Amino acid sequence: MKLRILLADDHEIVRRGLCSLLQKREGWEVCGEASDGREAVEMARQLKPDVVIVDIGMPYLNGLDTTRQLLQLDPNFKVIVLTITDSDQVIREALDAGARGFVLKSDAARDLVAAVEALQSKRMFFTPRVNDLVLAGFLEKGHAISRTQPPDLPTLTAREREVTQLLAEGKSSKEVAVLLNLSTKTVETHRSNIMRKLSLHSIRDLVVYAIKNNIIQIQMPPQLRSTAETTIA
Amino acid sequence: MAVRILLVDDHPIVRQGLRTLLEGRPGWEVVGEASDGIEALDKVDVLEPDVVVLDVTMPRMNGLEACRQIQRKRKTSLEVLFVTQHDSPQMMREALDAGARGYVVKSNAARDLLEAVEAVSQHRVFTALARSPNASC
Image (cartoon, rainbow over all chains, first blue to last red; front, side, top):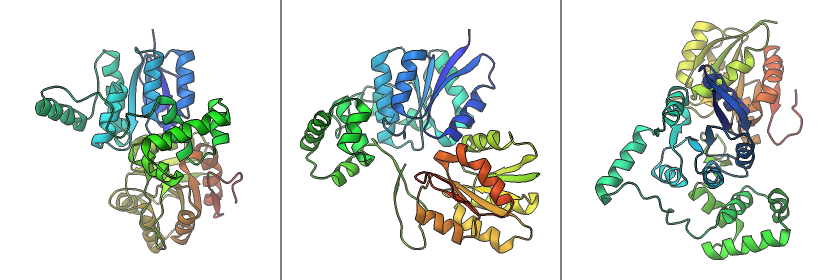
């Protein structure tokens, strides 16, 4: 029986590269492709893949929250997180979300096949830096790395995190309501609760919070001749 | 028309995706790959491609600087096309000022890349930001 893999990345060109890499393996099949986290959750519900590969920096629902929702849907889903950074915080959040694999995008051509093989054999796959962090946590605390929420995140519900991401991406309450199939009033209530819980006072504060907590990711361009600018990836 | 293409991006998986897309076009050939600006300059000298598909953000030497240096040394009718994550008019202007003939956003590369390579290989300008509904050519 074929190993069925679902890919979730907002860049079609990346998905093409991943497909090309994975489908070279005999017995592996890319059964679906999603371009954002919400689509990934829906496709996983329908397709029941053996492995789900999710990019962290996706619109509408980032890869970390996608992983959480996938595992709420079915704790047996095996999720590999693809990321552009292996900062301590991202590693902790990926582990906390329940990912069993963690692969840097820059190393995907080298590591992804090994990661899928590991999950296929009911093992986990992490970069050396993740292994170091887990080991350090074990040695320092006498137990493995904490699977509790990071300090900045404990008060938000899953729905509030979704709303936070969409607002931070620049969507209005009305647009969020349409996307999440909620009333505008309900979204406004979520928005007020989020601002109150996090002691934020403006959308600008919310965007900063979302960036700081990897709810959305940014990429800094090289210094331009005129002025530097930031784009939300 | 035969087009010889050099791919420059620091992520091999992105280069693989670009390659599968470009090589689907009869007559087009990916003659080489580079993972940063410095390697790109070396390969431009050796491979003499018609089109360099160049990322902006790369280690060692970014795409803008590589593009400027390619323009300074180029002896052929080579053209540069940026394929980047930066969906920004300012970055696009900077790329064109550096001598590029085309600018495509990575999120729309699957939609725009073939048309862009065709345009720049014929020395026409092609630019398309993700937020713009239509590419300009």
